[in-house]
Image 1 (tube, rainbow, N blue to C red):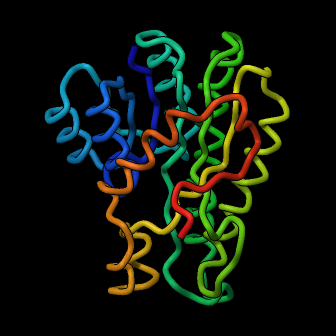
Image 2: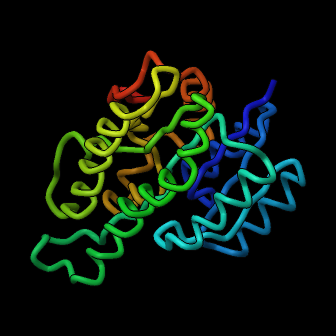
Length: 228
């Protein structure tokens, strides 16, 4: 039987690739993103089996309402994937404005926390489900000019591992690095150098089965889809 999958950041890149692949594999997707036009396009192209909503995950009240309606209509998710994230413009940390830093923190850390806060209690009550928080190679290493992004992904590693210790033995919370994927975020860092990396659509063909295979045995482990 197909799983019910909640995933954030579905309008482009890795999120969009995963949505399209999960659809092909017969799963129900409850997705969100910030771009109304792209959300409408997804809903039209993939159909009424799925539900796509315009949600800013950094807004706790919006996430709470989204989660409440989702659980009422579809039940608790089997798989909760926190994918939504942004990266700062390449810059030395001292030249990153407070506003830009705050936005990266709000989406990449607080957004993940908001989604878990409102979806996980029902999953825990049912002793069922896997939480996957998209991390990065820059959540386990560092590079210059992306310090805010590195800070958020290191936070995701720690948050995921701590939550893993609080879950029932039948559940899992996993910080998952995708590896190097040719997304707009990678292009913003490396320009044309990103062209050698795998495209999101092809990545998803590898990543979707990998994610679907995660379970309690993987709880708290820092895992990577592509060892590049």
